Length: 518
Image (cartoon, rainbow, N blue to C red; front, side, top):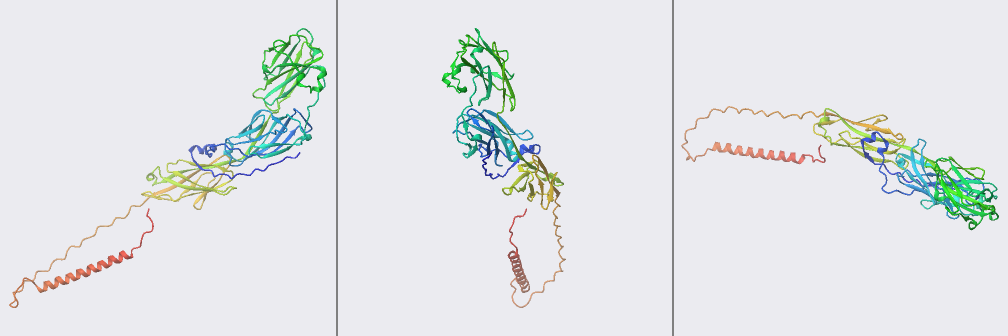
């Protein structure tokens, strides 16, 4: 049988941000990126086909269908994907709710089948896995006849999927022969119950107050409001395709009395008057399936009566189910450790920047972790298994009195590289990395020795004053002293100019600063 497949475009994987959490060292789930604020409808159903029956399909037959699905790596918990059932001709889904589990039993999502569609909701499994995909199966009933050999399903985003109908369409209901003894049948309904039908010829319900007793498999629960009895003339049977108007109902209480049994799955009906021999009587009712009912479980039901041969019918449940799987993601966590003589001088709130990067199919992912000196671990999750992560630390900020050594990345699976480290991500695990920063104390700055002052030279003995000259009159001045004073002033001026030039020269030749010293 052909299967029409619909390709889904893979969405680009979003970059996974860093999450600050020491718990991340213990569990991968703690590393997960926060889910999207609003759930999205995904285009995930890739193929649908009818697997049962393989032959002709008739009105009211039950069909089993299988589908494959796959979601993009950008999927978030709470995102959904769905498939609406055909409306022309009309098919009605058999109600069911079931989990999608991976081979280890983890829940990938949960699906619900209603009368009109199947809808699946993803769990947080998608936060720790890539390439999440799986299969599912469900049932629906043919409610209209058609000679068209295909039907159209619709995905959640409106895309059609065309599916072939075995036998080339939906034919009329199969005819049944006129019952000559008590017959019983059961069918699973679309709302999670089993509907039972008992046909008894009127001639077998003789006597004043004939009875029918029904006993079902323990676990089934009778729904009393669904119990109904009616009759149709034998000559109006028409292969069981009689006109519904020809079925005459009996009134509860006046025409028959219902008495529940000691078990919830048994009961007795008593006719208040003899039945008519030329009519066929139908007893119908529903039983609720137990909450733990599973695919393939068999439920039996037996009817007996005062003049009726015991008859048993069975119904095998085959509602819906599915599975899922994905390629696990992992992560890494980095914690800072300051060691050495200078460690006590480093403030606990000092920060250190570490760059990380890793390749993906959609291009490289990069980011920066800000680590505290107090050893708090920072982690990154949601990384594809097998990805190689590269780590490198920025140059540490200066701390007075501390000399930083070369940073050292250590941990299981961590390999040192020139200027950093590399590690390989494993599925559903976290690589713990310790970043050690060795320190030493800065040597004390040298002190300038005090300048030694030379003692002054001893003065020469004073020359006795010369006798007064008999020439010019004395004015209180001395030519020799004036000459010495002038000479001293010149020398001082020259020295000042020289000093000024030297200072100017030094100022002009001093290089300008282009950076900031640490």
